[in-house]
Amino acid sequence: MSNRPRSRKPQRTGRANNPNRRSGPASGEDKRGFGSRKNLSDAKLDRTAPGRSDGPAKRGKHGGRGGQSSGPGARRHGGPQRPKRRTPLKDADAPLRLNKFIANAGVCVRREADLLITAGAVTVNGNVVTELGTKVHPTDEVVVEGQRIKPEKKQYIVLNKPKNFLGTAGDKQGRRTVMDLIKNATREVVLPVDKMERMDTGLVLFTNDPELADRMRAQGTKIRQLYHVTLRQPIRHEHLATMVEGVETERGYIKVSSAEWIDGGKRPKEIGVEIHSNRPKALTMLLEHLGYEVERLDRTALGPLTKKDLPRGHWRALDREELNLLRMSL
Image (cartoon, rainbow, N blue to C red; front, side):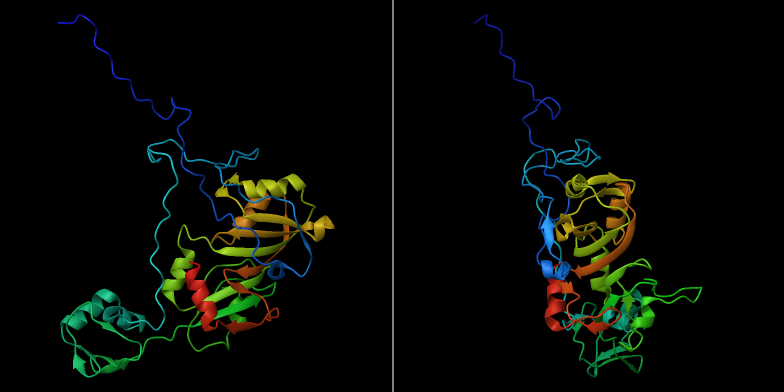
């Protein structure tokens, strides 16, 4: 028998002991730059801040964060993360479950609709339906307890909001709101998808489609938005790059996809910004964190929607192509 000592197996090294181990990619929003400068402003733009690189983001002087943390919730292996698969939004004319059809008509909630269905109190095109999960089309004749019901027709309205209008659906003090501007747009009750401040201007979307509205408001949804921002003081060149790199603010980590001076810096108080977010106040919070006061915020693009041929204070209904593009962008 050999007297040679047994060789010991090499110990595994953890993340802290292995400098070559790659962490996950930086979290953040889409790295695309401006898709169309015409949508942002008629003024000439000068790109001064580079887009995000393919590598992991570095920590900036203002607290921007890059790779993932190494805490308990961090990925145990390096490499790119798989993007979350999101269920595509259904077409407004697509068939839907009978209980949802009844709930959308305002008769009752889905659970109560299930009870009505199993009790035989619902007919579809003259036939009693008791099977849960049955799907119907918007054109089907649905009768609940002897009364025919019709769901609301889905409406999608875009407004070019002027200043001095509240972005809420109502106001206890009787001040003007965006609802006053679209009161003749439709008989259906539509609500703004997000809330803009009173002095903010630009595109606001209204709808009575809860699925679309919930998706646009959902955490993690990144909606491409373009803004023409006017500040009370000139913005420093290095802060444009800082905005792209990202900043840790009191409300969380915020970054933009692109930040540019308007007219090549001839108007240093005005910048064009592209951001992918569903938080209307994110851009204002970022600029205030850097020490700037926003005088005017004008949203010139919301997803595929633009202000083209839409004067200030006017609205229009989305056409089929715009609605499909909006659904695909979510």
